[in-house]
Image 1 (tube, one colour):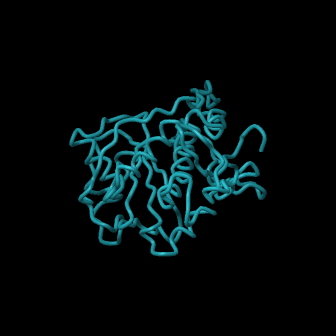
Image 2 (image 1 turned 90 degrees about the horizontal axis):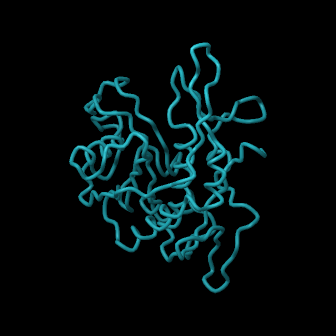
Image 3 (image 1 turned 30 degrees about the horizontal axis):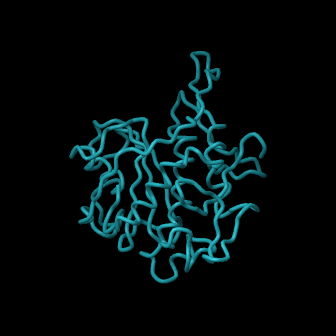
Length: 259
């Protein structure tokens, strides 16, 4: 969901990125993660690995910022404005209801959310129905969704908080949009590796043991771009991935087999 004022050229950057993510070395690591249900005896059931396919689904736009420019503010009547945006677009028929999908709400340069600009660059959530009293539709299925913001909304120094290296020039000529791609990959990987944890389901989270900090796989490598990063001397930007005729600069992902 492109929330707010998005240029077609910027939408194209995001769509090209998402449509090729499943072919990347980043996503190859994602496929090493699995989930399982507990048996009646409390033993682990068969492992269900993350799919090797990342399919770009249907997109929708919210150009008039239906819930305003400050989402999840203290005055919001919803438990979560991001989920409300997702539900609204599903109910209107613009997006399908897909319990196996990951819904992304990507905000523009005039929209902020909660503590965005202060504490995080994005977040992924699963909504368990019936848990909260709110104006949300609690009879709807569980949805896995994520928010990623445009750092330009945080003022002139915003990109320095969520971006790395490509502050003034970037691989696709739009620094703030290029900066969003790493958090997008981060949140999709986390949503795929631990979408829902219930009494009879176990998903991946790093064990807090004094060495590891109990974080998700994207958090463990946040802002770490690896030794393979390349510098395009002609363009003046850094990149470490390429597909769909574009270059990207995204973080690494925690490898459960080797780390």
